[in-house]
Length: 155
Image (tube, rainbow, N blue to C red):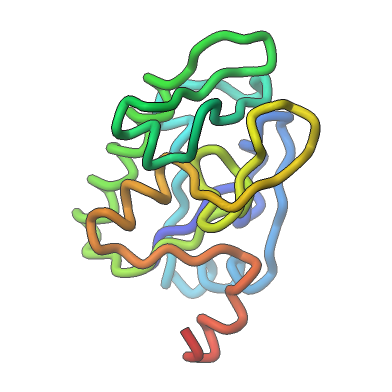
């Protein structure tokens, strides 16, 4: 079984109440080969919600208590992001998921790129909180950006 970011499956759960449907992921859902998950909602955040970014590092640093996640108004939402990451990990383990496909650039789900914490639309190399936790626990994390390579068996 594969877990996938709910927004990539067409569910309107992104911070601004939209989705970013990926047809290949929708197909996996239709074939019952994948199940959706949204770490931010599982952590207790709502839709819509203010955009959030990691300040002072990346998702691994957040897990280690060396960085935090704040929303655009400056409210610390680290607790919700960490909780959502752990609930997602538990679901992945319960399903024996070996791969999780997550939305790139997200402070939860980014697997190789995240926003730089300044709310200016600038990205840096790094991973989100959920992506970091899943990787630490031996689960392969793939973004929609390299989904084709993964599905073709090249990853």
